[in-house]
Length: 547
Image (cartoon, rainbow, N blue to C red; front, side):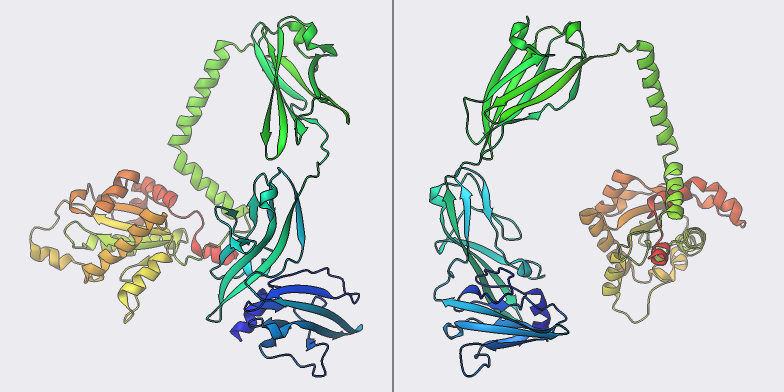
């Protein structure tokens, strides 16, 4: 059944494909090689149709060995020489019986016969499609190899869809090209192929010379100063002496004016010839302003023109410049000072007016972890995480937090659970207690240890997972929260020191922790605004509600 599911995606994959989409009775021929995978689709049926396959030209209409039907597709697993012949598919619907016949031409060797000829003019850039679209839509590893006359082609430019790009083709590039794609289906390796003949022609494509640029452009100049105007002209596939490029000033030839010089040079790009004409004006005069200055191209096919206008630059007073500069400085300073407030206000408006928020698949907005330079987590950090942080971020602002110790499931594989949970969080919030000793004895410290930190190795592991992902993939982003004063980072891992140097940390003062919640939050208002600034713009709960 797994192979049948893949059949829908491998439809029309063939070693040689020549489909005309003509169901009038004309036989379409598929050119294949023995030993390769070949899947034939009934062109008159869709994915919901029931079709019947049979082999023509024999008394026994049953399919030969090695050929089977899967979800309406005819599979050759793989092609054998005995499979050569005609096959017919039938579809019955409300309109009656529809039939179409296919001819399968099997040849020996690795490269099948070409099913079409692709002409490319000599000297131009071109390419050949692999024409195995369905196989490139499979989520499997693919190995692509192009062959010319059944010999590997080296140093080629092939994209992820198998398209072979050729630069400035010549006669030596002609030949039979075969696109081989190696895949694995159902645990077995197969090769699919498609051949086509590349023919190099000497046809000259007639290209009308025209101005590429300028097209009605305006150039700001200063009177009395020199200026140059460039005109890019597409000539064709080769230099043509019958094509003339010249400049005019409001109908007057540039050669008739003083202080005007014209230069011209040719260059080639992607099989085309371009001319670059440069008009040099030694001194801009008032009479050159606000008139059409035209770059004219005359060829046997007609005349094309591109025009520019010279416009005098306006004199701007020094006072205006200074005022504009000062205004810009004031705006920049104001933005930096009120940056956090502006961003939070913008997020609030975005949540109210935006109806669609992309879901990133994360379950939590933040993973809350504890760290202490002495490898002990104090009661202050536990109280801050479980009470203060949870109250502000979860209940007030709707964020979803995973707090170690509170949200753990007993009996689960600790390391696997930690790694999986960290990957489901948008932020990693690490709470670090100040290096200042608050407890006088080791026994006092032991008494203050939170039950959430009974295994310090687990605590370090979650931080290592999150910090590694943050430094390598910037996901999750790390937020450092310092509790009650400065932290001695020399006693902490170098990765945390690097994050501290790169983005800093937020500081919470436990002195502001009072019995009244309003007093406590007001004293650290800037702390909460900065923390929300670093949190995701849209909480996970609201994303899930919107979706």
